[in-house]
Amino acid sequence: MKDFKLSNKTQEILKITLINLALLLVFLEFGSLGWYFVKHKQFFYTRSKAQDKSALGINLEGVRLNQSIVNRLHPFFGFIEKPGPDFRPGFKVNNYGFMSPYDYPFKKTKPHQFIIGVFGGSVASNYGVFEVQNKILSRYLKQLPGLKDKEFIILSFATGGYKQPQQLLILNYFLALGQELDFVVNIDGFNEVALSNLNNKNKIDLAMPSIQHLMPLTSLANNSLSLKAMELTIKIQKTKNRINDGLESLESCSLAACDALTSIYVQNLVNNYRKDVIRFERERSKKEQDDEGSVIYYNKNNYILDDAAAFEEMAWNWAKSSIFMHKVLSASNVPYFHVLQPNQYYQTKKVFSNAEKRIAFNQETPYAKAVEIGYPALLSKFSNLQKNQINILNGVKVFDKTKDVVYVDSCCHYNQTGQEIFSNYVGSSIVKSMRKDEARSNKK
Image (cartoon, rainbow, N blue to C red; front, side, top):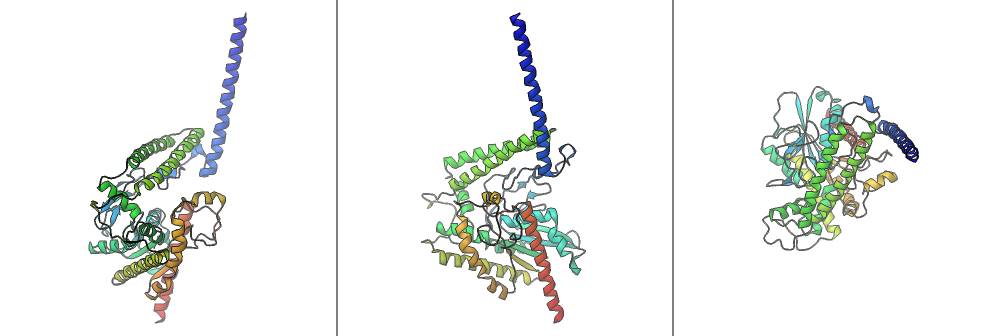
């Protein structure tokens, strides 16, 4: 009798447990449906199929899923990305290490094609990708009578870490190879002060490519990468493999709860990836104790320049490089526009929410001071650029009118909203300037 009662009680507990579990799963599914709708603005069960991994709702900014985290040395450019596939459909890291659908030099296949070259660092590279995908600059240029029937081809010559005079040298290199360009946009400023400042602190000539990017490559070439850095490399690679597996699982989720839980899991992996990359960068950037036997040569200084002298030299390097880009392009009547990119560490009237502050600012970054001192030095050279007929656009205040989150990290990069605002600023400013130039020409 006791066994019968115990059996009934066990069955009752099991029944209640199963009911509660079922209710929990139902509530979890309904909650996940609401979360998915708020996040994606569509119903989960009738959702559009994601065209690529970047559309799955995971912030993959800065995660190079199909690339090594280490760049490759290049005899002319300093360093490049490793050529190969990219997770964005239609893009690859091309034969010269640039993010593009095309290998270079690109040859026109139709007479009405109009080639726009984009130069600069990672912000410019992201801009190039965004323009290929969204064609914002193309829509603005089509407002001009002579360009309304053109097919616009965006060619990116920008890579993360590039700074002047790399843009100038790359432009001349490709012109020497016969690359046609009908229009050039150069987006820079941040790297010229932030990365050149790191060069100065390491007694490396300011005009040399970024020591932050070259030093680890030197360590690899000299077989002197630390054990800790190698361990982090392996850890990062394993995390990337898990992120890829998680993204594949996310694509195949048939329940909203699966999507929600997998998204949280994958985003946590991405956050860990970024933290490990920062640790890796710190480790691999440590100065070698003895570099006399290095197979890589740097132009070095005997001492660290004081800030006033260093940032003045940086600003002149930046301005003179732009002037020479303009001179070589103007010889072929190619319009050249130079854009000073916005950055969170240069204070404007932009109001940052607490959420964006957590994303966009890092008290330990070496970039903040460099931008605070360096951007005024760059701005002081605007009058000289204008005297040399440079179409210089001051984009530092472009985000001042929005309360939306626009930064995606504590360095310098923009999210989708920021990219859209910035691209519209560049497009509208270029068309406005070209119309003014046309009006002046008509008066003559």
